[in-house]
Each structure stands twice: as C-alpha cells, then as structure tokens.
Image 1 (cartoon, rainbow, N blue to C red):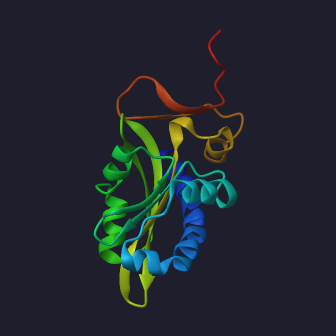
Image 2 (tube, rainbow, N blue to C red):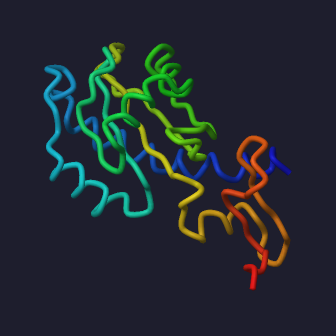
Amino acid sequence: EAGAARAELLPLVRDELGKLVVVADQALPRFRRGTGFSAAEMTSLRKNLFPGVRFILFLSARGQVLGRVGLSPGDAIELLSVDVVRSSLRTGRETASLDTLGDRRLVLVGAAPVRERDRILGVAVAGYVLDRAPRNVLERVTTSGNRSAVFLGADPVPVAASGFRPPA
C-alpha cells in the first residue's frame, strides 16, 4: 500500500511544480543575479497561485535561498540536503518524493530546475507537510471508507489517517 500511496501523492506536487516553474521563468533576471524575493512577494505568490501548497522555496544554483514561504530559515536550509532538491540542481530534471523535514515531519517535496537555455540558474521547490495536510490531500490517497494510515518511521502514532474514528 505504501507504493500505491506514493503513486497517488507524487502527482499532487508535480502538478504544482509545472506552474511554479512558469512563475520562476518570469523571474530569470533575479535567479541570474541572485536577487531575493521579499516575504510579501512569496506570501502573495502562495496565497494567489498556490493556495493548497504548504511551502515554496526558490534557490540559486549555489544553494542560496532567494525566497521562501511556509518554511522556517532552518527548514529552508535543511531542504538543500534533501535528495530531490540536490538531484534537480545536479541533473536538471524535475523530481519529487516523500521525505522528512525538521522535527520528523512527513513532507511531500517536489523540485524543478529553473533554466536559461542549457544553464541551471536555480531550483523551485514546492511541498506539502502531510502530517498537517488538508484532509482532501490525504483522501486522494486513502479511499474513503477504507481504514488507512501513514506512519512515520517506527513511531506508533500515525501522522496521517483516513477512515478511522477519533477516540472518544
């Protein structure tokens, strides 16, 4: 069932990445110069174009944080070490995976290169924190009425569940 859940979750973030790359392409001069995005710009971007996404991060090719929303400074830096982000910067391909972030939060992360011709100028990252995801994100993965849960590591407490009755 983990494979099925993964197959359902990854397209969620890949759909958002396509839109995010279009936005990043409009800001190529900023990526070229390493000029950052303001907090207000990033908040507006998420609110108006990506309301379901939990976090957005723009990184230069050197790993400099150009803009972030929905992430602490520490989490933004930690995302630099996530395989999908490093892979996207290195290979120039869009990538996505389930991973952990910060204090063992389960996240769905997608990364796509920001390019100018054949040169990678940076990477656009979008994601969901699944243990705090809107219910509809989890319901796409777990069929309504079925008892399903996603567990993080060996912790006995599910970080996401669908179909279970809350304890009385």
